Length: 230
Image (cartoon, rainbow, N blue to C red; front, side, top):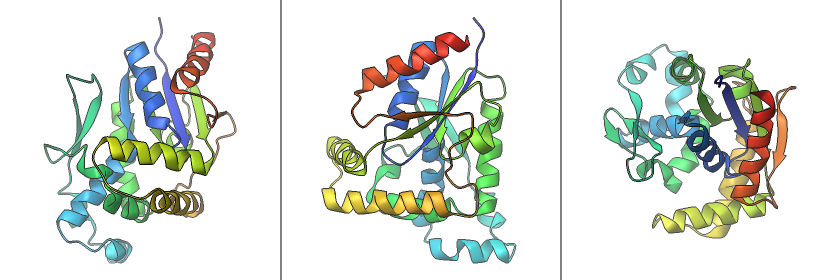
């Protein structure tokens, strides 16, 4: 059976990663959470006390590469869950990157062209042999514009806030539902209005609104699409 590239774009907390992981497990594909990569970069700047607000100025002054060159992002497989998890300079940071502090800063980090260029190169290298499922904001438009299957996911903001609240609570991370909703709404605006690779629906992508779909229903919808392509 031939392998394909599956690109999943969409809004924050609409289930992109959950769906992508399920697809990868079903097809035995490589799964890459591109958003986790931007979160890892954000965590690096926060931990090293590098002001997020100054990143664009550092890029304009030609010195941002001094920071970027020290960042190495890789993925390791979690033997318990069977899912790949992100590592920052050799350290598994899957839990640290999910905090509200990182969530509040990642959109600003992702607007910087130099950072996006570095991560896009890594993403394209990972997926060069196909058999990959990748989710993010610009996967079908920038990273893999020739992907055989492109999905554009969305869901009602209130439903997304509830899902994010449940996810954080499960991980022992404290945040109010209203705080999460505000963060999601702000990220929606930032992602769709940034000048560098904004979140937009590719002309050939398939819209998937999963507001009223559970995880299994979303997976079955996509597997049906994949079977027709393959």
